[in-house]
Image 1: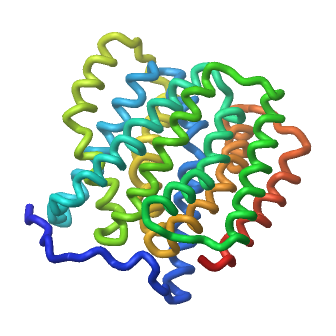
Image 2: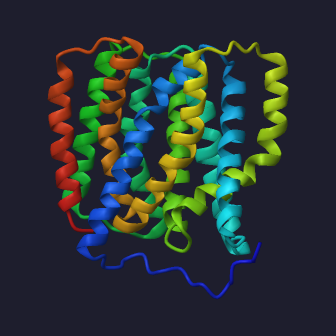
Length: 305
């Protein structure tokens, strides 16, 4: 492969984006949210046949093989040395940290309770983005983001009866590492194609994920069923690669803070999938929360940075 030229300079963070590009970016980010909303139900399916460590390691290996094949097929240049530190943050947060911590949490937590992570993720991502990239969203943006996050948190806590479990430590840890990975990935997607950001991050993890998968499969029993195989394939191809491809492209087009607010709809989508795929039951509060979240999303998308 060719080595990426070090002459490529990062694009300015505060850049005016044409309306068509913003619309396409919003659509891509939204498709990423839909893909992510299936992650928890798919993980629950995967845990029916795989142990938690096996599921995380194997999904990372499969996603890396898909990503590596795509990188080879297009002859993608190896990223410049200055980008590898950022790719390591993406790998640690999105490829390893978030999948591992949420999978461990879902052993004892319902998908409804775990959705509190994604409810808080947009606000955390916006905060880390402001610190990392120097963006300064408006006061209206922050108020709408806080209101949307508050509505989602109140709903998910009410769904779980207000009780906190030991899984919450995993969930809040997952929240922090994923927000860091999203922020760094969104920044890198401005200087290289978004799909290559997650592609190289996945490939970077192969020296760890391959031996981890071999060890985990040796010690954890495996029961291949339709649900477990479908869950594994989705979290590997859909959540871990394809979803992140469109997500990073969307973040590069419309900005990290605004893209992150689209994720306010993710917990509610997850709850819908949980009803359809897992047979979980929702309270009448769901449509009210959905309406409140959609209003907050509309405000954040119109608020100027």
